Image (cartoon, rainbow, N blue to C red; front, side, top):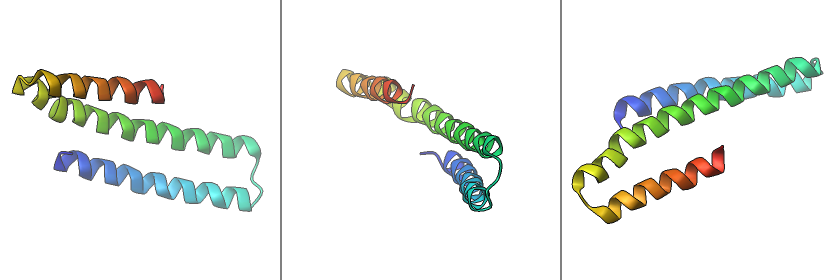
Amino acid sequence: MQDETKKTVLSRLGRIEGQVRGLSKMIESDRYCIDVVNQVQAVMAALKKAESVILKDHISHCVEHAIRSGNKTAQREKVQELVDTLSRTR
């Protein structure tokens, strides 16, 4: 992972961690269900954004490297990794 991506993702994950702690407090204080669900959705959206940043980095670094290498086996492996990963998360 590129250094800038790592910094961005770690920052996002720190905010997400705070959101999740806030969710626990909401549950403990018996907050209105829809308010809790809205916060859960916000956490999920934040995780999807972090995932997107990581995937973009992977494609622009790891996959691109495999393509430029000319190594057909490496190219197939990287593409198959993406297909497998995206098919699990969508």
